[in-house]
Amino acid sequence: MAVAPAESIASLINDLFYDILRRLDGPTLACAACTCTSFCSISKEEILWENVCSSMWPSTNREDVKILISFIGGFRKFYADCFPLIVIKEVGEYQWNRYHEYPDDWTEAEYYGDMNELESISPSDFVSIVDIKFKEKPICSKVLWGIPNANGYNGWFYNCPFRIDLLSCADRDDNNDGVFTLSVSDGLPPITSMEREKKDGKLWRELRDGLLLSWIIVNKKIKRSANLASWSPLDGQRHWPTDKDFVFRFGSVLSAKDVLPSQVVQCIFIMKFRVVHTEQEGFQTTLRSTELSMQLEDMEGAHVNGRKSLLILKKALSCRRSTNYSEVLESCLAYSKMQNKLKEEKIRNESRIDTICILSSIFAVMTFWYYVL
Image (cartoon, rainbow, N blue to C red):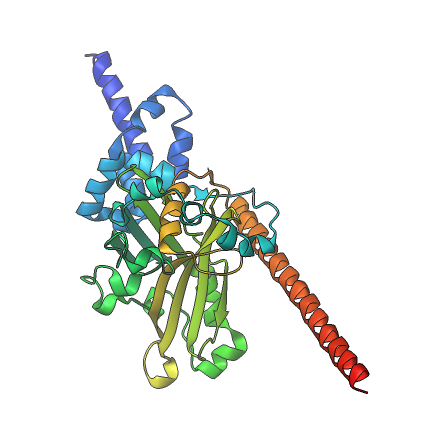
């Protein structure tokens, strides 16, 4: 009986190992790579990580995105950068009155930041790769090259609030007017009427628990990327501003060290839906997207301008990350607590000022009448 050469057996084993690894998701594939040298060697194959990225982020199937990912280091590096979420634990103590000090006390260079560093950052260097899923099923994928309306260094973009409205500026080849819809065929529960929904909230709960958002920012110049969204909604509001509207907020806490006095900001993603059909109208329940936007807000809830936002986004690509989702939630919760503390402190200070003004007015009136009489 003939015996197969050792090389053939080794090749057969490697093919078997490859067939096993190509069926794994990202975290499992990364763990398997640590078990033995054979798995470690095979797991370095780019095609494996391309399949993983394609499954997690359908937008990476686009040819232009594949070229971009290859340019910045490959799919394996892309997954390692974008699967963990950004975590900022050092929110730190914050004094609200610091915001009122720096506009008068800072020099122009301090107020606008490091101009040399800013000049090295171009809005055209950034690429947004956005994927939305509902109950693990992809419902929308969009790619935005550059930052809209950011032409010219002295343009309004650098001094006005930073905001990206993806539905109005992304590629519109796949969806009319850039919008997308959700229906019963996508897993939505059928609702007979909005009055019934306001009572039981079934549609709201399904959306809150089923929506997933990934918003990846890539900087072509420094060849780095990061996922700034929180995957699941951090909070939301139903039946606002009308009974048919649902609002969801995703986000993350980003470092603003040496950029803003608060040292941290919140990157907020707003996703809005409107009910366009219910079962009562003779159609299956259907929702239409009305907004998908990104903006940065400081501790006081003020929008960060374009100039500082570029610096913050660049810093975000080097921030600490974690695959532990509870750490991400803790970071956002700590930020919210600090923000609420700031609001309460401002209210107390404003109340003291009002009290002093009232007492001063009373004293002035009493003094006036004392001398008159």
